Structure formats: C-alpha cells, structure tokens
Length: 242
Ligand SMILES: [Zn+2]
Image (cartoon, rainbow, N blue to C red; front, top):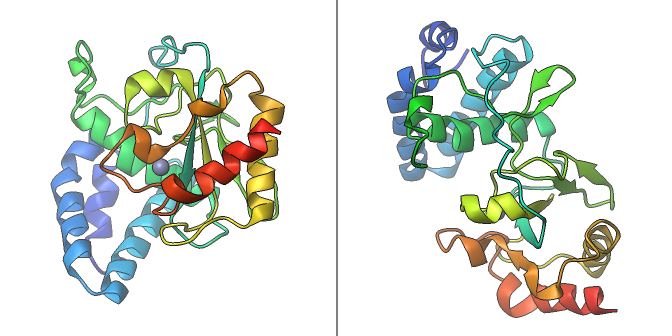
C-alpha cells in the first residue's frame, strides 16, 4: 500500500476524465515534500507514486481519451536534434518513462493549457495523439539510447515529442535521450560513437550546429548535464563531422 497518499481516494479520482485536476494539489504537495525530505524519503515517495500509476495505467484504470484532435498537425520539417539524459542510472524502464511523462508533461499541460486557443483542453481527458499497441503513450522523446548501443524507438519522426520545453522547437526537432545520469559526468567514447551513428543514419541532413542540448532551448534545465556545453558536445560534433 502507498504510504504517502490514499490509494482508494486516488483510485476513485483516476476514473474521472479530469483526474489530474482532482489529485493535482496533492500531487504538487508530494513533489514539494520530496524536495525538502531526505534522499530516502524522497525516493520512497517517488516509488509510491510510480508504482501506483504504472499498475493503474497497465490495468486501463486511468481515464484517458481514446481519440482527439491531431496534436501532430503542426509538425514541421526536422532541422534540429535535441539531446537529453534520463538523469537516472542505466536501465530506465519504458513503463516508468511513460508514466513520468504523463504526470510531468501531459497532465500539467491539460491542467493549464497555456497555448492560445487551447484553453478548452482544461479538464478534458488527456490525449497525446500517439497510440502504440492500441494504447495511448506519452513518451516525450523519439529515441532512448541504451548503454549497450541499442536505440529504442519511442515516437515516430512524424510525431511531435513534447521534450524541449518549447513548442516551436518541439515541432521541428527530434528528441534523443541517453539512458544514464550525466549530471556530473560525460558519456564514454563508445556511447558518443553510437549517438553520432544514430544521428548520422537517421538525420543526415541536419547541420551539426543544430544538434544541441536540452539546456540550450530551456535554460531552466541542466539536461543533458553539466559537462555537455564545454565538453562532450564538441566530441559529438567532431564525430558528426567525419
Ligand atoms: Zn532533457
């Protein structure tokens, strides 16, 4: 049983299309609590929330839209690649990523649709326009690059990933996430080789100068880590030049 919230109450809320408004204040409180708590408590809260949502999502017990408007209609020609990292240890599960992006990207947007003309989305069941295996998915990135070199495809290039923190950039970019925590370290040479190969094979037409880190678009984040700008960005670009 969850320790930090009432599963019964949240479970009931999840059946409502506007569940993210119903549990929003409590979810926000838990987030604030995590920031103040010690590392162990913070992890315990995170585990509670993720486990709860992963299970409910799996069982189809989260009210979500099964159809909606074409949120990919504004997709532009792709001219930018944005690099991210998970800022977690390798082996990030896709289930966890799906839930995390639902809760941290899609739910806040539907709770506060700040794009002009989209105010009507508030309170509506969440819709991503991205269906896989008959189920909606909420991945923000197009690719997740594993440490063994496997590149997992999360979104189609024709789909807009909500990853950069700017709609304008999202519309014309690809999001590639490295499955590791590079907050204070750099990818190994072989990971950079694999990343360069992924970009070369799939996005050959993109200028090297348009391969950027998340932080270049959104100054509020340090993603993909503190050693990117004066370090491994150059290493990556050098590989793309060859
Ligand atoms: Zn990022």
